[in-house]
Length: 98
Image (cartoon, rainbow, N blue to C red; front, side, top):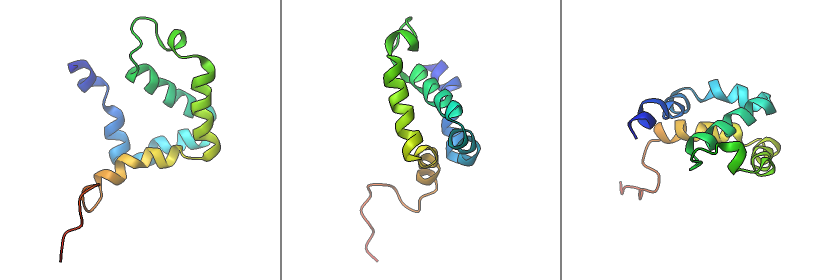
């Protein structure tokens, strides 16, 4: 758990403060998008010692990447953490009465 906090949460800092940095790579290059998503599956998946290539069929990974690529949703996904961090109010909170 400590390793995950020390090394696995860099994407939060990047996407929460500078989402355009990763957006350029994932919007302009299908290879960049594949690398970004594959790394997340590898890091977050419960893969044991098998690793990504042995536990997730390549067609499932490519289907996920293709959905982001064709719909051009990768940049919106990268900005989600930034938007949440800089929102005027909490998501899901009820509007306050004036």
